[in-house]
Amino acid sequence: MKRGVLMIVSGPSGSGKGTIVKQLENDDNIKVSVSATTRKPRAGEEHGVHYYFMEKDEFLSCVDDGEMLEYNEYCENYYGTPLMGVEPFLKEGKDVILEIDVNGAKQVSKIMKCVKLFILPPSMQLLKKRLCLRGTETEEALNIRLNQAHFEMEQAYNYDYLVVNDNIDDAVNKVKSILIAQRHRVFNMKDKLDELLK
Image (tube, rainbow, N blue to C red; front, top):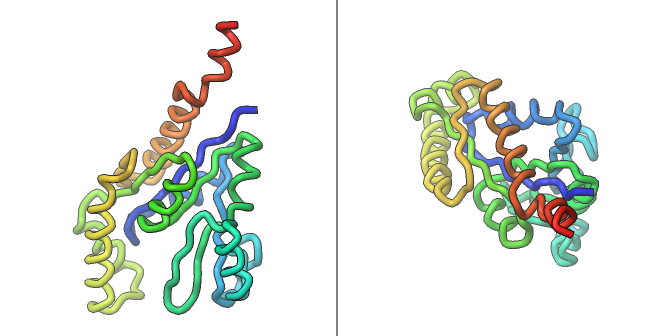
């Protein structure tokens, strides 16, 4: 069975990457990786669905044993991508999506073959508008997010593909097209070519 494609999806807060990834989950051939965290579950969150909720010692033990593809500490909690939620699906031939930040993308790309895709907003003005519409940000927090977005977009030069999210359906279709193209790269089709040349 042909191995699936590992795709990293990154983008600034407000770019719509989460909405795009959620829609990709509707495709039977795509599996979205579930992250692990040491923070406590929030209301309505389920273990193994929203996150793998772990104790700090358990999480750090997984890191030491090489069972985390990437991890980071944020607000005194750890977040990471367990290998167990990625490798089995790739072996089954499913494409696996990791929705992670630019730092996580660097870590994963050092360990595994992957394609890196960055979601861009149509403009900084629209990004600011999207963040304002959430109604959860103070002016100071909004400026911090916009500065972070600028930093993250500077890192997008290190990615393989850029998708501008000016329409969710179009953006989802572009991501699916990239996955199809990746499946047909020569290194992914080598077995078929070898078979024909016997």
